[in-house]
Length: 337
Image (cartoon, rainbow, N blue to C red; front, side):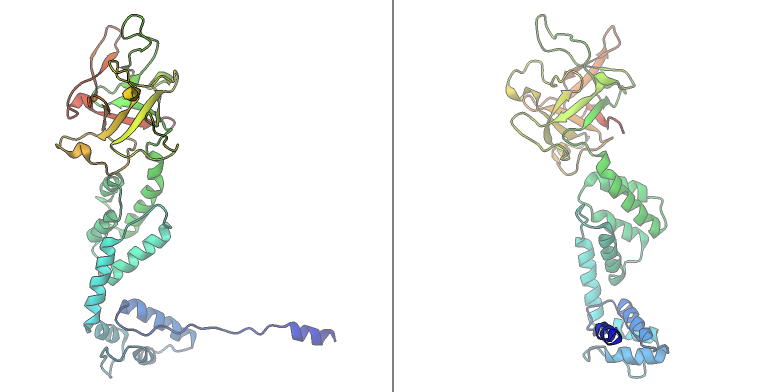
């Protein structure tokens, strides 16, 4: 009785084999043939001539393959000589040019798609492959970083490893709302600072900021905040030309223009520094560690500027210049990185 029940409970094991698709000119011939060969090996078909013979049965009749074809190379050559092949190749190249990487994508899926399109489009030159990878990125900053990293790399495997590494690491370098940063003057190497209360005029509650020191301390730490009347989500990246606030980490005082008393006096525009006219207004890309920027006051459109030292060795910070000058150049570092 027990044996009978045991036999009834046994589930027969079956092998389910998916037949390879018919070749109709929309596939890469070499990839398609590889699938055919795998299928044949599973079914004990090992001879090249037999595999080719079976493969020809899976080719759409509209695609001519010489009847005497008996080798893999001969079959691939015949498939590539048909008009459908250059059409497929051009389509793959078009899709490769449109391919864009998104942080929401799985890196493995993106790389797999990229490699498949390169193969189908016959893009085998390493410099071309680098170019298409760079073109897949939306962010100018990370594209520039990768372009520099790629420059002396002559192995495709290393190109992919660098691409993956930078894409995973780069978000850690982005300036975000809520980031605790130091702001360093490019020319002098000193940091934007706010220490003891130094009123801008007798009896004023506003105190001066200045540049001081080559090693940042607690007086040189600032917090990137939402601008007045806006509520940015903490952790959101700050894009170029965004309006931000800067709150002093220790005193919580807001950086503002001394001669401005309205509610927006604490609002600043983070622009990329450039020597090209009009490029200030390019808002592509995210502000990141090391990007050279200008901090422009929203109301009077003047940029932050530092100049002569006072008797204590501090550099005065004012609003001055056109944004193209060397003394308007600053860059940020994230505290703790």
